[in-house]
Amino acid sequence: MRTPHAEWTEWANILHHLRLKGLVAWFLEAGEPLMLLGAQALYFGQPFLGRDRVGSLAHLLEDGDEARAFAAFLREDATS
Image (cartoon, rainbow, N blue to C red; front, side, top):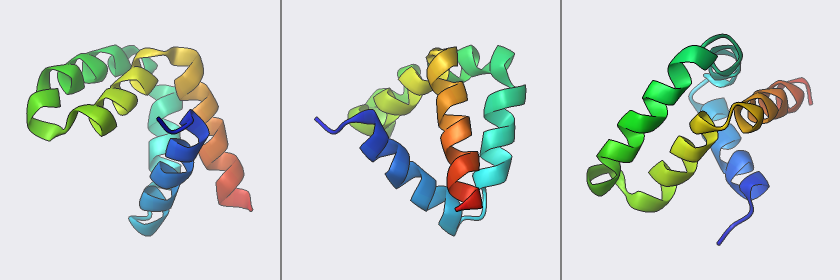
């Protein structure tokens, strides 16, 4: 199993290519009350979307501290 930071780097690269890093970082910071609902929707969709990736993303959304850390990672990476 990969470490969370390896996943974060992969996700950050995808978001960079889609030009969504700033928007996602903002959403993770501002949309915290809705993240639990998003995590539950992802858990529900796991059989259809792929268990490993969706499970990791759902866990990130479910854990507020981890979501804020990922948002900071995105912002830090954007300035580099």
